[in-house]
Length: 467
Ligand code: 4AD
Ligand code: MG
Image (cartoon, rainbow, N blue to C red; front, side, top):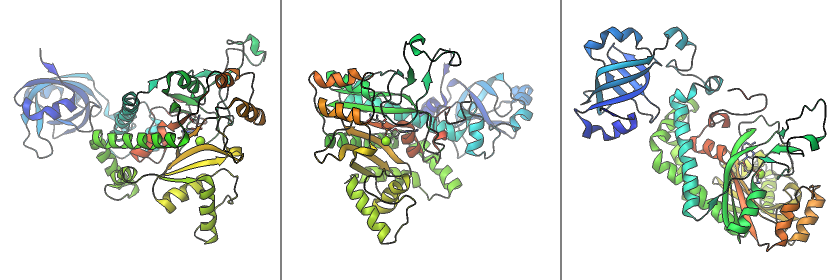
């Protein structure tokens, strides 16, 4: 039997396979001089050159761009300088030939298409160089996240997607029901006998797990029905949420920084071909400078992230405004939530490295964050990245029953629904901490894409759930 190879494997093993007969399958990217087929199977950004043998002349008409084929041939050292090996075909089977007239209307037509156009044909964009690069990198990021936690003794916990509570307390949730809401709103008759939603975060459940297993993490989809039509927001996105018992905020911050650096290092080491290709695209399209993407990633690794308290951040922003270095749209007042213009200024203009802001006013943060002795700020931390802004949001959790109960009352959290969460504070409660990393925002940062919709296979955003 002839051995079947992925193009990636074949090209990597190249010189050891010279004169061997092999089988490959893929989609035709180009067909030149009626003899050279460029074949790609998605395993790598690199293509395999197939040389059409004379005896296959009768199928020439069917060899069109986009067509899917199977090739049997002999590996030869290529005369061309672009590739080390090529395949001298002895047999080609065409699975399906694409009509060139249809091809013209699709993003598979080999010419430059905008990323917006690619989104309109999301079902075909896996076949493009740029999107396949992004998807391969997305895979490697997800893989190394599990690797990191596994190697650091974390347990992977599956928290529910259907919940009754709103962990973050703010923002809208998607409701789930099997009832016809036109006829009845009596949720005791609904599927779960109560009102249920798609979860905005697995944190509260992850906390309960950490209070038994020690170090846990979740990695799953979360849903937010906010009408945010920005380049950084999705209605359905993926979040990684580690939760660690006996961890204080400082340890939480260190974990987050080490974890982010590990991921960036891993991707530079394991996805360099795809990164180089993306860098070339960004150079061409956005007039970014040479090696811009790799330099941006190296910057993450080079220095410790800057750590400042919220109060210090406000002071810096206020001083910069007084020095007339910048005029913000939202005035700087202690107690306000930081807006993206403030975050961007601190990261991109002032410090020029990632910034960790901690100890936010309790008023702008969720009910579960641990109250500081000043009674005004909580042990929150946000990590802000260049271009993206907030990439991580986390905190030390309020482990003291009475204080948590009071905070829940003050922020109108339904105690009857979250009785189990409160209960954990009565059975050996301990200091504990965790954070949420926006997976898609991380992929966006690493791939250098301007829009988060271009780093997830099928984006869900307001007014859009096609495909
Ligand atoms: O800051 P957030 O809302 O934090 C939480 O949900 C906590 N429960 C996490 C925890 O402590 N376990 O969200 C965490 C991160 C943000 O920093 C951001 O990167 C990302 O999730 N994120 C979004 N990503 C894409 N689209 C959206 N609409 C997002 N909202 C938040
Ligand atoms: Mg946040």
